[in-house]
Image (tube, rainbow, N blue to C red; front, top):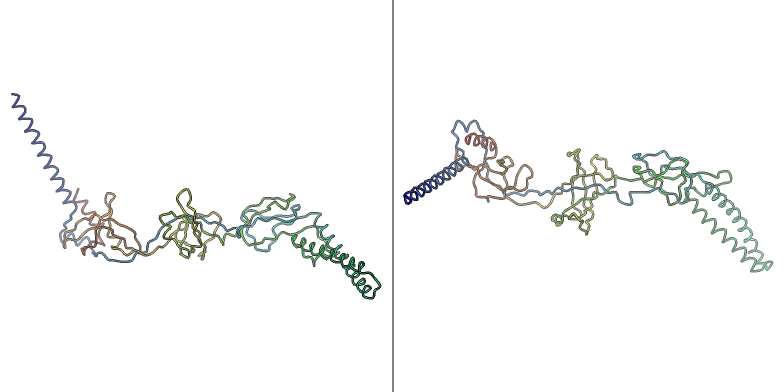
Length: 376
């Protein structure tokens, strides 16, 4: 009885294994059949099909990076005044555009009056000293005055000349022309002018406030001369060169692109593994730049010589890429492919290699739909 049970169990086990093998073989047959599509002539008329073989072409390789505008130090100006004073007038707010030479702040202070007074007084004393020196020089020449008296007159003249020229420079620092200072034109206020054209970024003072020479009153930024600070990963750094051209666009308008040229490459690697590459904007193409503006970058690299097919030849199915090989007029086989970059409506086929076979271009998705329906 025991032997009978053992024999029966073995028979059941072998039967089960044979059934599993048949099931696996059947599944393989079904899977193999679903990768091949055979159409009748009438079906083929309803699915227009074009074919092409691999072509060996140059594809321009493009890497996509991120960047933001960065204003250079010479295009960022903090407005100060060498002598300080009380703010008499300021009518600017952040976002206002000012032109170079435009009055941005008016200051008032008694020291401006004192400086002009000192200048006029020194100028008058110098005229007197010049006359006295000329007189002493003539007297000395006729032995009517001593050398010491003439030298004292000359020293007084030189001292006043130095003071006058120093006061002239101080007046210029106040934006007051020395030639405009007269007895009837002593000013209590001075104008502060914009040294560059640009947009007011920040305003730090208000009317009536006293500002010292160290206090910045406002900041002006000329964003039109901004650089693009491009973040490039180390793996792509070998493809970047000074003088290389790139295009930048925002997410808000992907069709409007500005042109720039790589001007410098940093030697330091950031903590996130990127290197800062700076590009000078060469053509805004109607775009208005602002500080810290984010951009997407397209950078064209050396062309890649590779096997390509039209993009429409590649179909996606269950997360993988395929092409249809045309085995004969009515028979099509679904072939898995590994794709690479795409450009100009062509796509790189990394595998399989070029075998001279013919692949479906137009109508590939229609064939995929027909294959799915057959599978169902």
